[in-house]
Image 1 (spheres, helix red, strand yellow):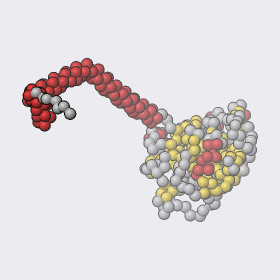
Image 2: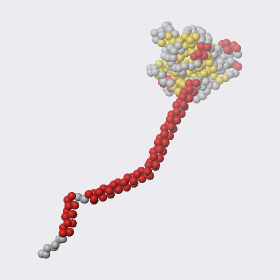
Image 3: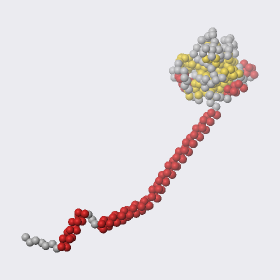
Image 4: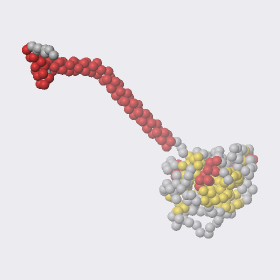
Length: 347
């Protein structure tokens, strides 16, 4: 085999290549490589800065608009809250200023058509012809059952109401109806709640929100902690007492006592004042609901259970209810309806 001769130059080139492989690139090559990398980095930085410069205004604008939108939402929400607060304040002020009671001016010159049953869908007919102007006072009695609650309704005619601390005698021919009015505390505690008798305030206190005011023949039933009618009763030599509220604006009102007893109420229906008694023991809830369903617009409680009283019908017959007690607690008071003889004589 013939050997191939290698020149000295080729040997030198081969030696340099071997040295470069073992030791790496030369200093010149390293410098050149670093310069190339720096250029690339500068180019990348320039491109990044350029991209940033091109995108920054748009991003800033989006962020600014987003913040403006959030600020607008907050402002709108704040305005809405303020409007709601103002609306609630105005509503409460108007409600407090509005009369929360119903008044009935007692007309002594009317007489109803005779009826034994209360009609929840009709209004009683009245006559004002002269022959009825001098008719003596009496109680028209009607009966009905509402929600399985038997009710007896006592409607006064040609009679005026008053309060008294003394029970009249049953022989008093001027009395056509009598029932206990305000509650009396146990152990001779006395009358519970505000009580005005002929303009004199005998008791102070708001134990119950329901009230009745009698001023110049106008009987008013209402529900309120404070009412100007209390002072009006004092100034006008009238009457005022408090009791449990039962119905307000046609809606029944719940009360804390949950037991059952014979219930009585002073009520207004279709502008007519009346007293109503349950025929059986009822809870406050069922009694108030029956009154509302019978068309009563406003009602407060009268002492029920076995509290004693009586009424005189159109034929002059006197009928008692409850149980007459030989002993009497301090402060027992009565709602009395008397014949208006003086008014009739003036006619």
